[in-house]
Structures are given as structure tokens and as C-alpha cells.
Length: 158
Image (cartoon, rainbow, N blue to C red):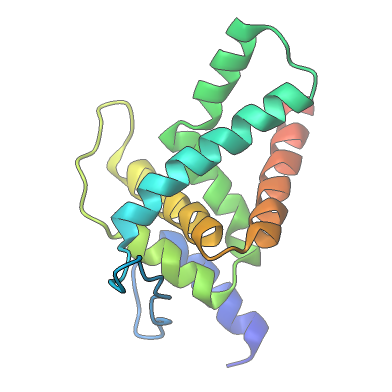
């Protein structure tokens, strides 16, 4: 299978059922040499994404605190993160898809404000953000965040 086909198949698989062509989960070790799990990556990714959102709001000239707060809450919601992941899926590498898959499959309790599928996808998105941050791949993280912002800006214009 060629790289483009593999990425396309895996990109679809981010939101679909698992298959047998899975990439191994990329491992990041903690200070004690233990692997950091997908739930911990999602926990960190949640904070990193929140910071990215706030930074964007402040640097784009949004100075009304109530407006910034509402925009931030809307952007970091499970449904918004699931939509962001769907927009990013076509450009994710097989390794990134593996991280998303592991995050998506992490067993967590689902809040009432989100559907199970939205929450699982948002956890996968957060795991990816946490993974990229911890692995020191800030350039790729920013590239993906820029894609999220560009698509969001286009939707705001419509």
C-alpha cells in the first residue's frame, strides 16, 4: 500500500472502527522510564490546546474578556475538538493516527455535554496534542493548529 493510500485509510480510521493495519503506538517515557499512557497525553493535551486557543484569541485582537471566554469555551468543547480532528485527519501521519486511536480508545467517563463519539474523538485529539508537545515536535503541533484555525476562520466567514 502506498503512503498516500495508507494515510487516507488511517485518516478514515481515526473516526471509524479499528482494523488490522494499525501502526504501533508511539511511546514517550516519563522520568522513571515508564511509558506515558494515552489518558495522560490527553490530560496534558487538553491544557496545551487551551493555551493555544487563548494565545490565538489574545493575539488576534480579541480583547473583550467575556467574548474571549465564550470563544475559548466553544473552541475547546468536545464537539469542536472532534470537528477539528475530522478536518486534520487527511494530513495526519500514520504515527499520529496511532496516537489518536489510542486516545480515542481510552476508557473515560463521558460528560453529559457531549455524545460518546464526540468525547472519544476529542480525547484522541487531545492525546495527539499532548504527544506532539511532549515529543518536542512543536513545529508540527503549530502546523496542525494553524490548519484548525484556517478552517475555523473559513467557517466563520460563511
